[in-house]
Image 1 (cartoon, one colour):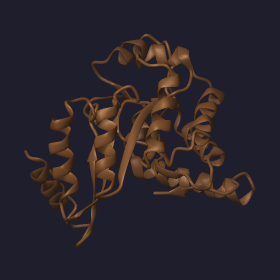
Image 2 (tube, rainbow, N blue to C red):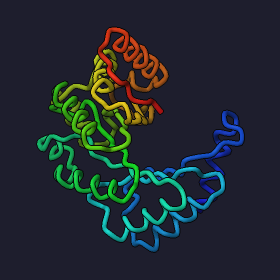
Image 3 (cartoon, rainbow, N blue to C red):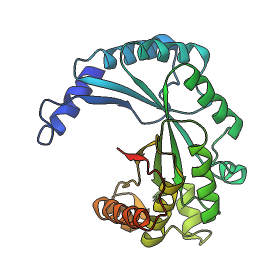
Length: 248
């Protein structure tokens, strides 16, 4: 389908909940800056020119932002707000090697600096529960992102998906996934570390139930989100949450 057809199909899907709303055109799956600039131009401009689109969000890798693409994103940002979402996941080199991220932390820092200097909002993706990482390792990653001057963060729970190398390691007992209570408490701690002006765009995620191996509790997203909100509220009441960020 064309970009316009995809937008209209998306609007139909949420028509029962949203009447006369405006939308985010989200280039989400895979690496959405990995194409010739003219190819990207045709896609981006079709999305951002749609009358019902308020924001264009482009998910990509920090190592896939050449100057020509950055210039195009800046051009689009003059038409309507553009957000760029960067998949960082972790600041720890050993974990980055294990998940085959493919770039060092310095590349992320450079991408953030270049995007911010261009006036583009940046949202960073962080994965909680990666194999071998301690609770403090995860908090250190979130703290680093909080100090990196990005505009938003997405906290994502590690999912073990059928047919992956990760599933093999999981079934061989090389690591355990986070328990429900541990994840809820961890997210509340993460929120407490973030600055007031940072928007939290995501606090969990629900994998495809047909391919999800673990943790199965993550499939009940509403239960997880409700528990996280309670935990954050409790931390706030006892003074553990100073200048809470905004939840989107």
